[in-house]
Image (tube, rainbow, N blue to C red; front, side, top):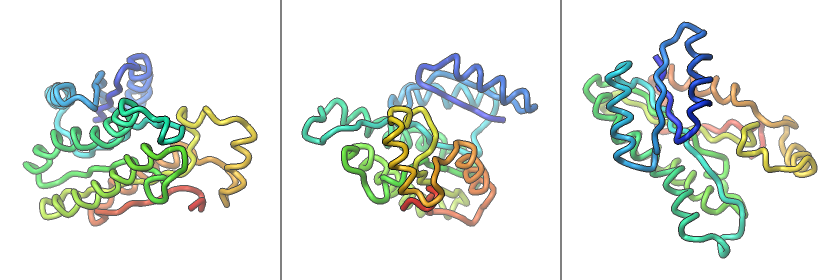
Length: 214
């Protein structure tokens, strides 16, 4: 069974649900503001009633802000940190109790190479992803005695909507820096997530997938 949430893209959720169910897998979808505690509590409760408890949690919410820090408003800073970091705290907080009852589970947080090395003009994003990495390592130590693993994945330049803002010349410059000479694909990241989720003895790790970029 698969449970998927999004903040507002109901059509995208419905399309994804159809793709999943075409593979013979049950899928529960719902709208959820992962920065809002009440919304998270309601979604976790409703999904558990509809399809069962969570064995694997993937925290994947993410937005960015590109610009100088001095030009960034506190509202924009909080929006990035809440979406990228606080969401992982809230989702984990309300999924962990059921994992503890079963004494098993996997939490996989999606970070970024910028969380490892930082990026000019993306200070808030880098800080949020660096926070994800520390959150991962600390929570892994907390939950390891209960047989619950916590890891994060740090993708490099992946072909997603977030990176559609780059012009061709900017993309060419980025690809010149990547030894494999191209963007990664979401499916390549998904394959890594699957491998981690199937590995019970890997925990507290920040695993980079970036084509040799960093």
